[in-house]
Image 1 (cartoon, each protein chain N blue to C red):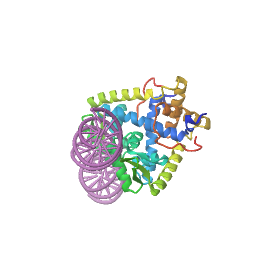
Image 2: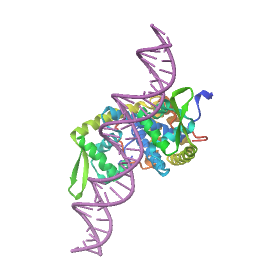
Image 3: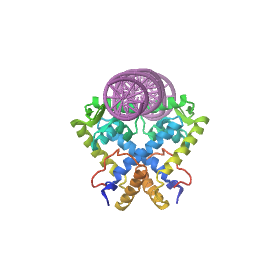
Length: 154
Length: 154
DNA sequence: CCACCTGATTCGGACCACGAACTAATCCCT
DNA sequence: AGGGATTAGTTCGTGGTCCGAATCAGGTGG
């Protein structure tokens, strides 16, 4: 193999660089929807269901104080709201507002479209294999549900 | 397949969730080395070679002002330095200091170790296939060299 | 020599992360 | 029944990060 083709890339470098790629796509799409990457991520997580702060912090991997700030700023945009938890007066549940739902749906759909393009150089079989292998890595490492599973994906 | 096994995960969700996973590992490792994620990323990029600000900004995907700040803070730590470019008095080249090199080497090696563990549920053939498919996605999308290729990886 | 372009920095503003401390509510044991 | 321990979440202080506009200094070409 000619030197110009570059070195063999192992699984570590491939994972890190693909992460950089997906991060960039995610951040670009968020910005076009007037969101920051963290706000976009919050909206995507809340599409599935409302969450208490404790669980939401665990899913997003954030300190409680960080999450308070993020929810404050996103609520100030009118995209989420805090609801009291009737079973525990200390707790709140964070949920999307109607406007937050709309924005989340658009952002999520556009993010899916763009990320779906990334492996377009692979054929269907290869794409399926990639999905299967990455999915197993994700499951083995117990990644929280930070992005909804799209119907009829892959 | 039983319902308990969960939905079929497509390539989009698999990519996003694996990105979340790698981000978390990267951030955790950086923190243990007393670095922020962005500082860690800067150090990793500079391991390969010094860069001018313009090119460094392109590789990292940052605005020039953002990069100035990041280099300021990292230089204040004594990890990088700005050198004048003899061929153009406007330009500087950013390079690792001796201390920066040492920290970068340790951080990089530890990051590699941890990320290498992520696909440990796959066998060697599957790991090779994952590396190959992801590498092709990375190359097709012209991802800049944000992480050095490790010798004998995969 | 001057206008235009390039390389980088500064400024202002907003976002984001965390740990410590705090407030309020819940639970459990004596 | 009351008090101590624990839990849920917020506030505060601090430092890091991001960007666009403006600015400054140097390079280039007509």
